[in-house]
Structures are given as C-alpha cells and as structure tokens.
Image (cartoon, rainbow, N blue to C red; front, side, top):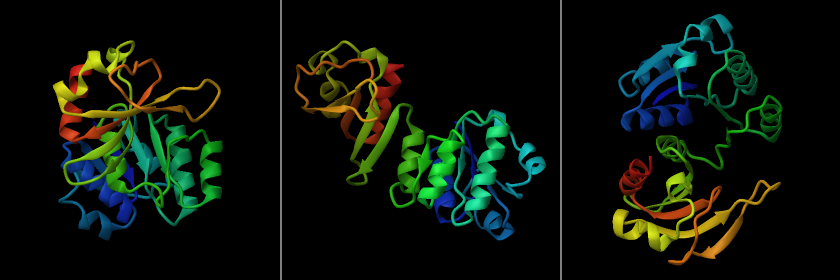
Length: 222
C-alpha cells in the first residue's frame, strides 16, 4: 500500500515509521527541514514542502496514494487548508487529524469522515488499522495479542462460527458480534458469541488473537 503523511511531528513521524516498518511505501511530508532530515532513514521517502501551497502539493503523487493522512498537529489552519487541497486534488482516501471539536466539525463539513483525535487514537493503533483491510480498530493487550474490531469478510456471511472454525483454522477467537442497525451509526452488540452465532452481511466481529493469525485469516477470505 502507498501512503502520504503530512506532518512529521510526534504523531505523524510515529505513524510513518510504523507503516514503513510494516512494509508499506510512505512519503512523509513536512515544511520543516529538520524534521525531514531527522526521519529520512526511517521513512521510505521524506519531502520538505509547504502543504498549504497547491502547486507544491500537486507535485506529489496524490492520485497514486491509497490513503493520505493529514497528521499536522497544533496548526489547525494549516491542517484544514491541507485537507481542502487534498479534496480539490481528488485524493482517494483522506484521514484527518483534529485537535479540537471545532476542527472536527469543519472537517466533517468538508466531507472528511475519517478523523483521528490524538486523545483517542495513537499513531500505532492507526497504523495497525490501515495495515489490515476491514479492520475498524484494535487494542493491544501485549506484544502478541490484540482485540480487533473487524468488518465481517463476505466469505463468511451466512455461516455460523461452528462452520467457519476460526479457532481451529486460525487460532483466533470471536468474542462477540455487532449487528448493523439501519438508520443508526452504532450497531447492536449480540452478547457473547457461541458456536451457533450466525454471521450476516454488515456484521462487525470483535476478535481476540495475534496480528499474524489475523493476516492469515484475511488472506484466506479474499
């Protein structure tokens, strides 16, 4: 996957280096040369430019990037302007970072619905979510084990947990499912999952397991 990250402060640099370590191609962008130099050996590519300058931003391969993340921190004006330019340049997927409720409201008005709040989402958690298709969120219990929120792969729709055999095949456990409720942003938690739990279209699975085992399961579900 190809990512462009604007802003190489603590959050943006951590996100960029984590994604690079995961094997993705990352372009880290910052207007401060000292930040670009600091992380040039840890990120696939680093570039120094002003992200509020449309000509400068247009020189980047925005159209080729799978996801563009605006990780600019305290300069809310620069963050909003950068996001607006990315919308204008038709970036495929934009994830914004907001440090205030007002900034969140402005981004939502601009049509940005994937917004990271630093008090809610760490850079490492966001990197893990980006690393796996369908992962909504994750919580690290240890170096090996995570609780993962995952959209049900279409392959398993219409099957029970007994039929799928997640535990036997992939060494992961489905703790519960969240059923989609039409007209509402939040789904309905089904309670503790059992062998007879039926997986349906739109379900979200809450899984316990390792990221490697999750990767094996997702690879088989494609």
